Image (tube, rainbow, N blue to C red; front, side):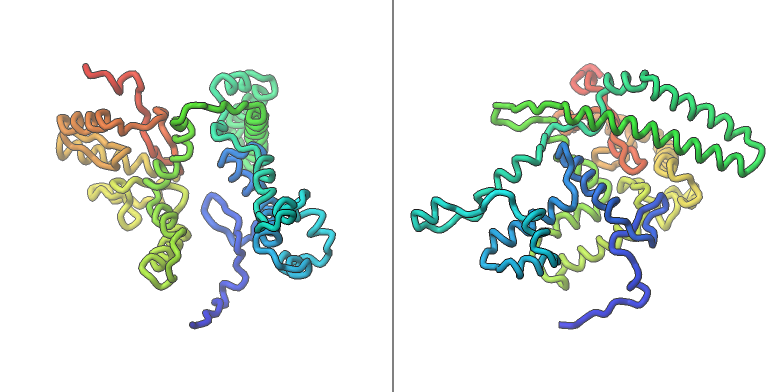
Length: 372
């Protein structure tokens, strides 16, 4: 084997850097922010109360103490990095006894998972947990006095910013507007958290799985897998027990480097990806970096559609297949194949992913209309 030394310019780089709109920064993320981010990930995975770093660390130490077994208290403390036994026993090890009294009395092999189900029962996972406010609740929130006042304040500040006479005054007004935007987002966040806590879980007795739950669990496959192939390949390789120098290991390293260096602010379908940092249409070839981030995907889409329409007289883009269809009759056949094969999304709303229209919207009343 060979020991790889760290590069001199990488010794001071943070392991968990902060992110900005432009990408990674050289500033390390503080532990509070990282803990909140982990909790937000747990909420996105349908855990109502979230789950911070302490929970996963605690579960790891419990398994070291119970599942592996045979370790002394000093060995477990050294593994945990604790110097005080009260910290390990009082805050990390399970409150319930892990001893299998029945097996000990009968002389059987003791079970190691006696309290595992009890620990997971308190996590409060709801597979149908909503990640956004329903339209009715959102409308009621928008009519609340505090929300209305913040919206009016934002509008007034926008007018004042446009008419500001000095740069200092404009920056001060923009700072006030950012604060108002933050307070309004906070109201939506608090309302969503309260709604999640009051959301009841409906247990379905039917053997087949719930469609909504399937849609939520398949989001990675439907959207991220399709839009970011590097993440898709890395997710498939991550569970493989293969050497790092194997074909799969090298592919994983290449995907990690691509995820780190690629612009994560905007993603593109395969048929719409820029070439050499420029618009893929030869007659345009505009540099993507010179286009505002919010308009980059739209520019490539509109430019491609206009170019193909001039060349062929017709152009339609299928977001499910990432493919341009340049004939009207071919487009009808293509759509009919999706409809006949039930290859349409459960949710008909358009899906925005990283400032990109990842999935177009569908009219549910027209999907089965054979007269169209």
